[in-house]
Image (cartoon, rainbow, N blue to C red):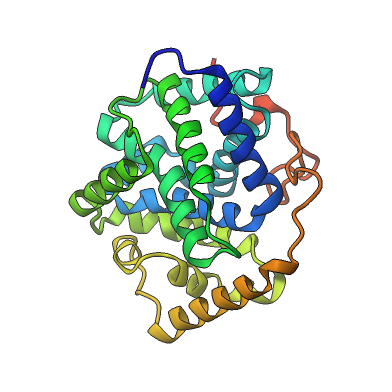
Length: 276
């Protein structure tokens, strides 16, 4: 990737990604980005660092929500907006505090590319187009460039290969990963509709790959549950022709977040304290 990306191409990629994530496939991108967050617990080196920072244990709901809010702020506003520039600055300050292996850094970035894409292609109301997939990769390559992450993939196929090879080598059970999952289990449940909250653990198992579930101390989901998920996905796709995308973005900066920011949030409240 060049040091100065084509601003027209970047603007177009942002437009395509924003429309897919904020207007058209809102629920599925939210699930996919949540899955990306939890997946990092399955890598012992990353899990141990997350435990060491202490934020996840002290404020698990805030920590997980802030990660999503940073990403949605950036997807909504773009890199050259005032809020987008502040997001990248905050992310750099947070991560520069800790010695992070370059491979781990790249893997975490690629979770935001590969995990939501695979989720939507498997279970969403429609698969992503090649144009959308390319736009997502372009967007996160630019984020990686601005965070000084090295050896970024040139194509989505390259991203998947790097992602899979990394997981094959690094995903393992650890007590840190298990502890993080136990600490944040109720965070996932809080985001489910009322009748499903009690089934939060089962649903988490259903939407995680078996080897990832084992690595964070969960039993793989029963095969009957996985078959049901595939059946639900087929029904969603048959109904897709009647689905109408939103006519405005679901995300509003400063929005209310139950349990964390009941009155809305100021940008300065996101992330750990004392970033400056």
